[in-house]
Length: 189
Image 1 (cartoon, rainbow, N blue to C red):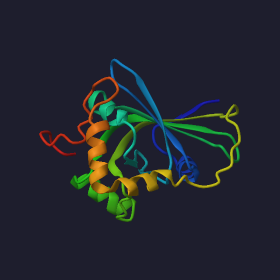
Image 2: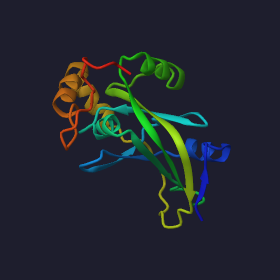
Image 3: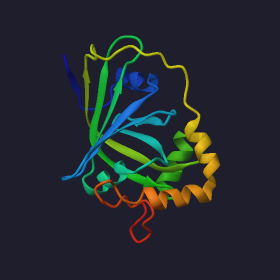
Image 4: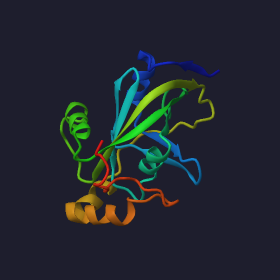
């Protein structure tokens, strides 16, 4: 039932753009595997071989650490409404740090220059393989809206509070790998 493509075809692009939620999966050579849900209209299809998502401050920053250590990234989207389908994008990812030229360019071109409070980086995926599968086992759910909790939390923290939070919780992974988020001694990408 699975189909594979070497690029994001038009039907798969349309499917991606209809979804309200996606999942990211990363791992380093050793340690824990990370799997995270994402929403808030963060995902953009840049072309047939690239997607990017605007990543906001959260409880950890495993994706950045794993991409720095290994580079492998998988995104998965599931149809929770309509016909069943699961779509996975496999490839190599990298982080475009907030304040970098690449970040600014994608923020302007893909997100209308709007940077939500709490934005910390953009994750770029160079897609090497697209795979679809049936999704028959995925239950039906109805999207009723976005949760306002992250926005409210970010407003309460303010820019200074968010910076302090990132310094405490986002510079190393659960396994002690550096994320590069605040490391000014390396090149900003």
